Amino acid sequence: MKSKALFLIVGVFVGVVVATVFVSTGRATEVEADCHNELCVNPPCCNGDVNGDRVIDVTDVICLLNYLFSGGAEPIEIKGPPCDSCCLPSQILATGQTKCYSGGAVYRCDSADFPGQDGYYQLGCSMDLRFVDNEDGTVTDTCTGFMWQQSTADTNNDGEITEEDELHWPTALQYCDSLILCNDGTWTTDEAEAADHGGVKYDDWRLPNVRELLSIVDYGRNYPAVQPVFSTVLNCHWTSTTTLNQVNGAWLVCFGGGSSHGYNKAVGHSVRAVRGGL
Image (cartoon, rainbow, N blue to C red; front, side, top):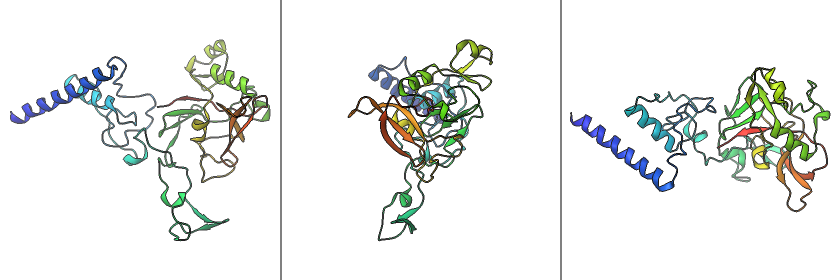
């Protein structure tokens, strides 16, 4: 009897704390306690990720309280990688570099001559098991929550991805804004055509900003500097970010070596759309 009473007291206390947080932040009606987030393509990655959305926040408390007192969804089993690799929204992304160098040669990472290299520490959310092939033409990044087009965009819909698919910057923005992934895996920018391909699966695509697109660069690889799950990667891709020193230009991310630089918006370059995020 005492244990039941203690359990109830603890539950009420947690509920009061959560309610206080909601009232003080004015977000009581905005927070959703969805215990099965659509972007959760993997199970929870650590203790505390009760609802499996790969982020530890107040919605996990809500899910737990719903399960304990309102017959809500049961917390799902933890099977993912270690806690420091995915769950925390403030987590810095690892670069993917695992080797160390002296000049132009591979060198020992424990060398006192060139200490503290990226390849020695390998800090941040690891590239390993990070990207998930959704088998519908998209890839989900479990560290950031972004969903990406798996291939460089076939903007002219001819079934091949070549330099003919390059767009100048305004058209790249328009293309991504109108892009639709159909339920049968077809990409289109025509709503009527989408109906002929099983209807709309996702239509909230956009051109990524420069930091978003750089987030998928793997600095442990070259030509292309991106994980193999991203198929058909042409080199330089537009971002939605303008270069402020010359506003007629925008930032590119080039997957040949993972570089980024500004370029004239009137010149054609490749496109890869993104949706979602934290």
